Image (cartoon, rainbow, N blue to C red; front, side):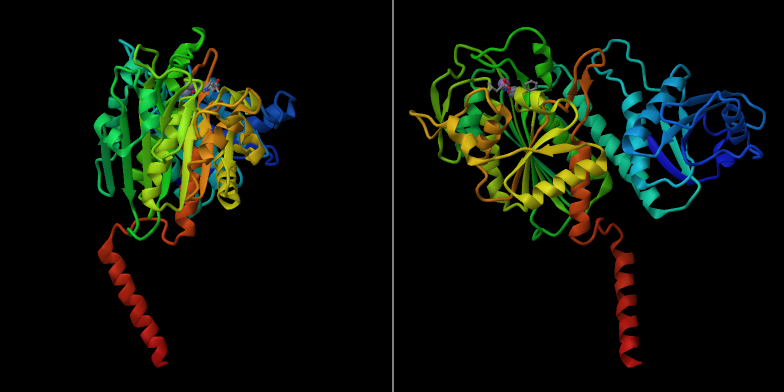
Length: 514
Ligand code: BES
Ligand code: MN
Ligand code: ZN
């Protein structure tokens, strides 16, 4: 989808160049009954007659009114412009419009709008208008192609927010696409091809390791999960180099279980189909890289994806088997369904070689996290308070929130094993925490955070499907990281910048003379 920003008055927002217009109207702005433009007038009339109230949930649909160049205008009250209120206002407006085939939509903000408000409205619209089509024989193409956002004031922040949101939506939709694809259309090999094509441009590199290379690295835990699968494993290494090689990268590690049967500790049949999204972490890493390609941030990012199926088989790993991880630690695999932590631990050890500034793993890791936090917030685990605060803040800003969970050492007691250095499961209590405690053993040499997205990456029920989370949170974190580390964007016009430097130099020389 294509987004653009224009500074427009409400009357100018109604143009023939859009098929429909959504007007987001906050409660504290009262419509002018004497306005020349019809929307304010009609709204004032409706309020005067007691047929409309400026409160959350109120929607007024106007059609072919004199003086309206846009056929269909939907006024939706955004109350106090809180993120949740903008979201509901946009959803209500879209529901009122959905029947018509809209290619070009205007979204106009009445009153003061902030960058975050624009991002929330556009992301909501993108989410509501998305539908998965890849494996349908007669796919219906999405009609909505262009969105023109407008507000009454000019601001570089608003323009920048629209550009960022366009990249973000591209990333979110790529993540949704891969998480939604059935496992036979999203094998480790398919994921590796996707990674290669996303990382085809300038500033990117992508290397894909197969079973032989992974064996040579000694990734015994990852290989144990893959040994029951007929589909060969892939270890995907993506690199985005937007800054000098001396700048330490952020490493993102995405769990890439393309289907999780549970292995020999097999899962019950009901809803097992949903385990095709057990590569939601990997999909979010792909999504972030997609967005990075559009935003050209001046940072370095590494993406690591251990990808395999988790299958029961005559050769599959068995409960009680002991394997040696790449770190050298031995692991007693008491439950083959706790496979995410096994593929992640070797990827985390691999991350050491990048001397990263931070390592963030993203995984649909535990059902226990769904019980703890539901579908609202992802679980955030970190041994580094600064990194935890940054990720928490990025979640709030982007409307893709997470919640910090504890990592007290006492939680690791249940992971003790008589036959190996560590067991891969503890009891049922605090299951998302004990999983994180297992991972933490492999993160001693860098600042580390873990996002458990089992509850947030997927919607169950009638509207079942991938959400594209936490691409929003991760991208916001990287945007903030870029801002904190100097230049936010790659210098794409070296000549222009050189000219600028000479200018600055000659100015300072002139100053020196004076
Ligand atoms: N992929 C699952 C976690 C999961 C469950 C994600 C539900 C999304 C929805 C993971 O591999 C798993 O099976 N975890 C087990 C761990 C247990 C065996 C300690 C679980 O949560 O039951
Ligand atoms: Mn599992
Ligand atoms: Zn799993």
